[in-house]
Length: 218
Ligand code: SF4
Ligand code: SF4
Ligand code: FES
Image 1 (spheres, protein in one colour):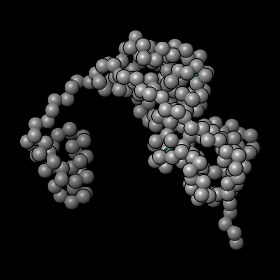
Image 2 (cartoon, helix red, strand yellow):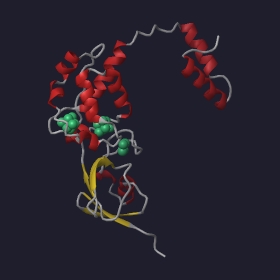
Image 3 (cartoon, helix red, strand yellow):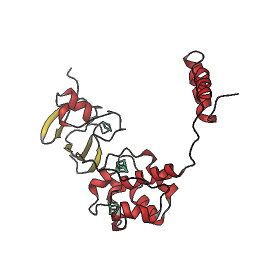
């Protein structure tokens, strides 16, 4: 018996795939891999942005080609997002410095398109409003899972650049954190000796202790 197949269109071309394939793996298997930008292949780098239309009329929206599974009759459009250069962070975010770097902050019309476009389900629009109110810690948490695919920026008619601002806030908070004193050479050598002792399981355990405590046991 013949294996079941799924057919979808990518940039207007018919592609035959196996059920359960992602769009990216289906294109690879069909010898069309170069037609989709890709990096990690696992939903981390944000390179494989697409928009989707389903055969039954369901709205498909934007997504990542390496995460979205193929469906019969779907139409997929490559949606490459141009990179936007990051602005230099300030040491500690402040409303005036954020607005100086991103004067578009107050142009948000609360259309929610950015939130709908985000493949990581980040509450992008709410976070833009938090930026306007200077709620920096909450903004930093909102963007923890941002992969900088740029889809929120691409769909924003008002050119607000939400994820660039989110990254700016996170970097500015990090710059303001207390400076970490340099580790003395003898302490560093002792830490490495301790971390690399034992078999792989023991090393993993020691790495977990070090990450939790921030130091090796005395
Ligand atoms: S897409 Fe732009 S204007 Fe719309 S809610 Fe998001 S940031 Fe605001
Ligand atoms: S916040 Fe924007 S850039 Fe970040 S993952 Fe969501 S859509 Fe992509
Ligand atoms: S290839 Fe990296 S997110 Fe899809």
